[in-house]
Image 1 (cartoon, rainbow, N blue to C red):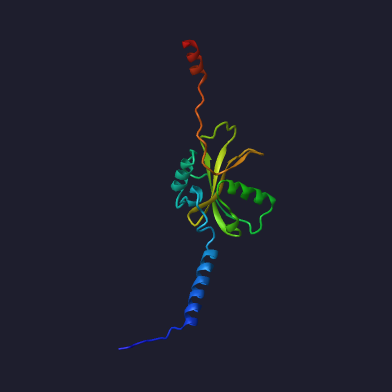
Image 2: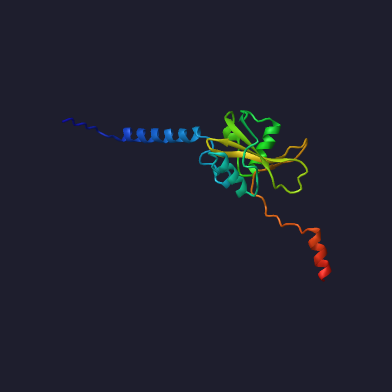
Length: 172
């Protein structure tokens, strides 16, 4: 039979607690974005394209269920003016890409089918890291087109058709 005993003194106990605290702090610093994402966008799972399509539907967009483009991109380590502006757009949606600086992510582009007043094609871009949506936008493919934050659409009231307006006017 083997018996092991040790004497615990105050210094060893304090050293052990301090070491544990340092290890936990380093763990949280190494895992970018974890624990910071509290909105629905950041918490959205993206293990497959169907989950991405479902997420876009939840925030009010109907898209073609198959991505039209999938590409690997790297979030720059240092943001230039253009990327700083893009990150401000992300912050409007409750996301922040600074924790992903220098990290490779996957960008999925879906064609939006129900964007109001769209004269050109509109797409939804999703930035995905570790099966989580970490950023994205809704944008026009036209030269000089718009780029909007990836956040829940406000409900739209359907416009009446001219035939309905004429019929209502004649009924009065």
